[in-house]
Image 1 (cartoon, rainbow, N blue to C red):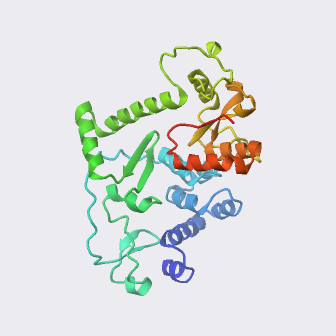
Image 2 (cartoon, one colour):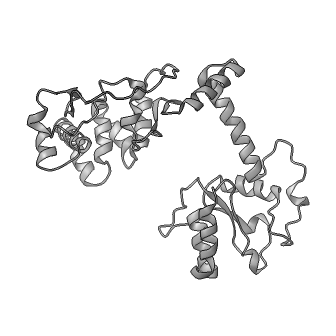
Image 3 (tube, one colour):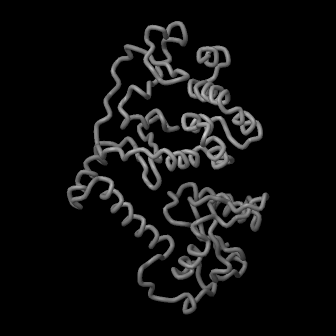
Length: 320
């Protein structure tokens, strides 16, 4: 069946594995095909759920997994089947030797089939056998990325995650130095460094501070300059919850939390002030879209080019 899916239907190894897994699971639980047809579940999600489905938990588990993304289903499985923490290690990724044997992704498991490979797939394929490699290197094949920056974050149990990424030697040395300075385990050292970095960035972007020097009611919000006061940025960020406020055509709010910018609903160029009621967070695409509606695409083209050249380190303030 696997050879038929890959050689006749021309499916990828991953897609063939997923579909075979779903077909076998549907024999034991026919409701899976109904939910797949109705769009309540998808192939990737069923493939994740299949090993955990039993006659006792099938109905409840499928109800909880309905209309969830693959990552959300992984979170759900981490709750019902938690895995132990992985050890903290830093190791060098070995350079692959000359390809002496090939691998095949089978419907039940991933195994080496160097002898049978010429009958199934071209010899030059060279797939990766994930069950045979070191678990700490598995992110290279699990992640959508395939280059040296491949990374993955996998839920192990509620509130516990396995984080894997490939790092250069310079970063490895910095991690060891950080761990030695803090005298803590690797995970705690990384968390401490990230927390400090987040606090500095949020202070710069959103004006967050533990001891604000000025209250919002004492802040001048008149449109005298393009500068957005820190008190306004703090208020807007707290109100909008670090999420884009653009409302889509279906009535839902844009779910984007990255690349957020401060947007003046009544543009600064038209006399809009810096009052929090006139300022909101928007993701960069929606901020640019609204600005085009206000000023036209031709006028906004130069600002788009300028934004493409920046690194996006600080949220922009639309003051047109």
